[in-house]
Length: 111
Length: 115
Image 1 (spheres, rainbow over the protein chains, first blue to last red):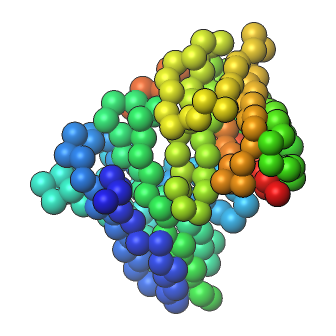
Image 2 (tube, rainbow over the protein chains, first blue to last red):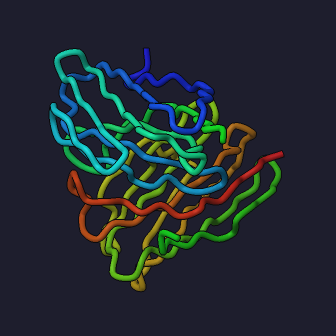
């Protein structure tokens, strides 16, 4: 079993839909949770960062962490074609150099 | 544009060969990280350098080595290449030592194909 599980999709939604992306993990010691967005032929870029459990909102994006269930989510409201990308979840114990990444979910938002 | 540059963009080589990938971090960033992204393993951390010194090692093979130079650019050396080394190699940089919450900025990657 992988330390971080993420459904690779692909996921296709119409423009304006609410998108839900999820990851589960096995190591209860993870404290920091991130979502990265990776456009085709580009490097990942940090989208959201959360410490411990709870919700964090940034514009159309909401990140949720449920440590009791070892489950994290990213919600995208009013999705746009420009949101079409691969979304990677990541989590770490202490630092950037101990991050574990999910496989990434490929999202397509159709106009 | 993240401000992190990587060269070359693409590299095709043969098994058994040695290649060098180069990375220039964002201006002012002291840490450089190397990652490997493949279809079967996903994105994996290889190694981190901070201000010229090795700071952390991840899943880096003994055939691979890296260094960070006084001008803070970094090189990743891959030797005795195998077919399974074919992957995207990303460099990332951050301002300081890379504590949790410190944003990493990724470069566009080098696509390596070993034939």
